[in-house]
Image (cartoon, rainbow, N blue to C red; front, side):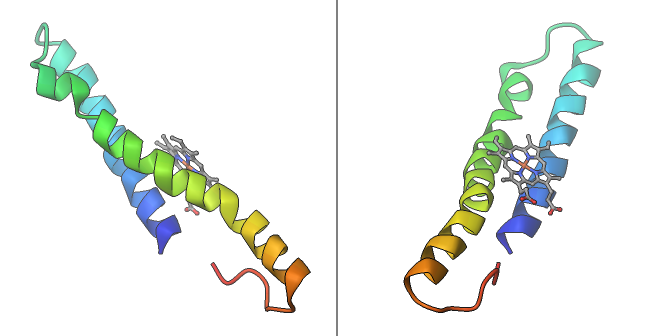
Amino acid sequence: MIRQTHRWLSIAFTLTVIANFVAMTQGQPPAWVTYSPLFPLALLLFSGLYLFVLPYRTKWRSAHHNESENKS
Ligand code: HEM
């Protein structure tokens, strides 16, 4: 669920970066185009940090009580 979100956000982020390059060929782009990658990037950061912590959280849990592993 979070992994799919991260995957689709990465596509959205990439598109905003490409849009920036395209807009730059027309001169200085408007500020909202320049800053448009930041919002998906911020969401990528949080979903990415969650994905990073997932395996450690699973290990921590199974070390304390016997639960089945890797139910991401
Ligand atoms: C901003 C901070 C980011 C963090 C902390 C982060 C972290 C992570 C982590 C921990 C994973 C899981 C790796 C694993 O399989 O164990 C992951 C997967 C992935 N990340 Fe990020 N990421 C970030 C930004 C990005 C960006 C900018 C992109 C691309 C534009 C990106 C694209 C992807 C993709 C395509 C996957 C594989 C998802 C899948 O299909 O399973 N991430 N990321």
